[in-house]
Length: 311
Ligand SMILES: Nc1ncnc2c1ncn2[C@@H]1O[C@H](COP(=O)(O)OP(=O)(O)OP(=O)(O)O)[C@@H](O)[C@H]1O
Image (tube, rainbow, N blue to C red; front, side):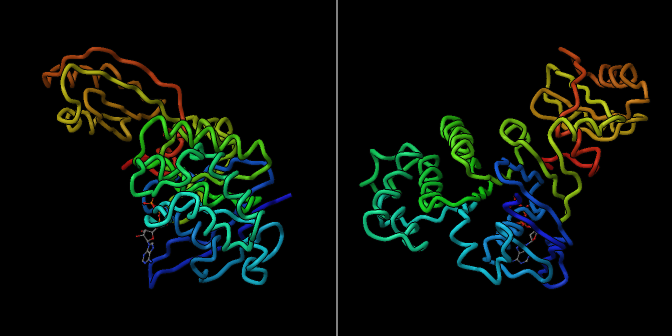
């Protein structure tokens, strides 16, 4: 069964098309990754599914019900973890969860039990009586998740839940996503971190300029890459200053530098490695290592868009 179906969805802001005739379906039990660079249209799509924005055109169905015609049904079955934290600083963690669960109609003992359950789930039961203003970024994110899941929705959408948090909280959140999924929730997980999406998602859609440009398992997406290779060169110096030297070498499609590493994406059919290395050495670079990489989702993104995911 499809938990979410989107048909021909378009959202315009004035003349600007943020979501462009998008269609997609998410099946029950999936952890569905929504991968795209900043501004690709991920948050706008989520806001449309959450009925926080009205589509310019198109249809969205949750568990086969049109969300505009059956808004209460849609709300009860959907949990949204927004990118911007939606928690009240002047209410305790427990009061926050109770407040949001109350919005979905939970009352009395059920409301208390579910709020406690949600706090336990994100590991904040000891902090139930504390105020979020004293929480770390990661704890605030976990509270945000508790607020979204207490009403036990069938579909949970998480909008970049790991941005700007420490690695420990990040791992905690990724583990929670898996646990929620094992408990029967379907998850849509948006991110511009390729590694996270690769790690947890059973199916991935790549979104660019408001359109889905590829959709499949990680293996299916990578199998579409037949014409690009990636080489990583580690230098003794910062890589950035050497990029211009090699940008015009035949076959080079794209380059990035991070600290002392340069990543080069080239046409598979062009043998240009010796030329690249010579140009770098002549330019004063001291090379520590050269390594050819297996294709990954980043290579898929680059091949489809001509850009890097993090540009
Ligand atoms: N209310 C708005 N009015 C005008 N333009 C908007 C509005 N909301 C979003 N946009 C534009 O729509 C595009 C898509 O934005 P969106 O936030 O959906 O991207 P995103 O993929 O979620 O990126 P990010 O990871 O940065 O949140 C951007 O170019 C953004 O500037």
